[in-house]
Image (tube, rainbow, N blue to C red; front, side, top):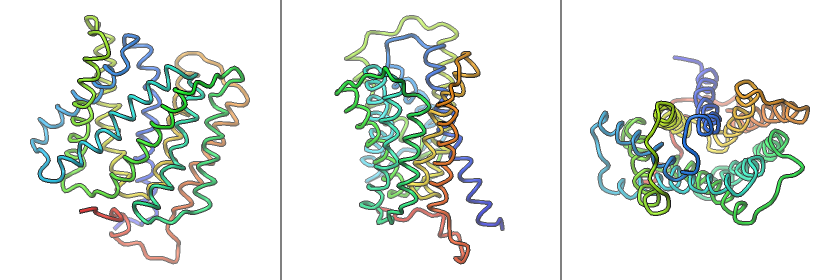
Length: 305
């Protein structure tokens, strides 16, 4: 049997891969996808991947899980991605990302309400430090504040935070791959009528467009959300949520390496602050060395059944 600390570290690394990969979304979207189709792109990121996974797992929800899957699909994908794009279009990227970095604080509150999780001072410090680090990474002095964009950014943070906590509360009765397939398909189906009603048809896709859609669907959605939901089931929600700071960090590093962007001194400080915040967030929920950690320690706190 593996040592519990080693197992927890592996869980953190695997879960952190998801937001690190999400940081590539901006690069892929701007370099490979047609401009001006945010809802359609979000739908095509979720629905084909969800349907493909459903064909593989060959299992549909039953009973109460039909409603739960659509609630989770809306929170984790439909609402979150739509609000994310609205914020991105109405706010400078730095402001949008900083507002989205509120999510760990929201998770702490919702986890207390829904799961009875204790509120730890170190977790709050980690969340606030992470927001500051993200601000240093991508805020500029000329950043403008649009009220609708700010509201959308906050709504997106609340939506994903609620999805994270409810995913922890509602223990899925199926393997993670099936659970991910259900949510992606549900989220994509909810986005489909919005895309058809609010946006014009996509132009004929190029090879680069198809490659971008395939990456966002298979890697940026299917693979990453299997890792993300696995982490939610094994790690405290507040510790999981601080890992989202890896997304803007990854985006900045990809821009620096892949797009030839400069890395300023404040950004370098922001990189260090983000890593410290993530470390504090994990340390706040680390098991005490005097406590025996058994298999039940990595099971969800409440089934919600």
